Image (cartoon, rainbow, N blue to C red; front, top):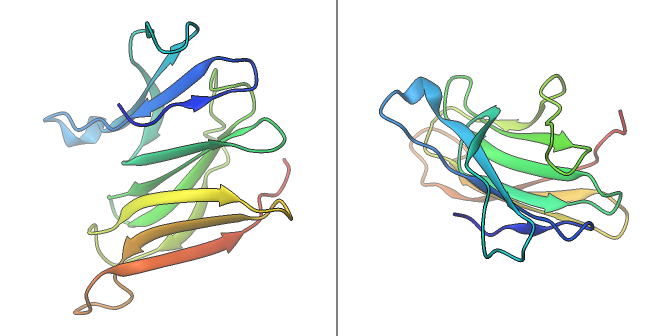
Length: 143
């Protein structure tokens, strides 16, 4: 399990990379704990296809998950939950950047003082070049 996020309510929420044999089912899985991590709910699908995830709670209380989308079109993507992970806004996917190869991902985000977000990840800039750490500085539009 990846590092959980402690929500303002005190609940812990974790997203888990999922790679079953049927690769069409690589949906991120989610679990929560109400007792400080002593026990966890059964894993449920978020409906978000991709991996690996990185999740933070934004200043406004929303959750942001960023992840690598390793299907064509390959990209770094993000989703928001406005209700502590009960639902994810699957209608409003954010694509941070595209790339030519599935050899990419492992994003990590931080919200900056001006409420913008810096997301870093690895991927190659051009075919034939080695992968490197890259970043996208972006703002989430309140929807």
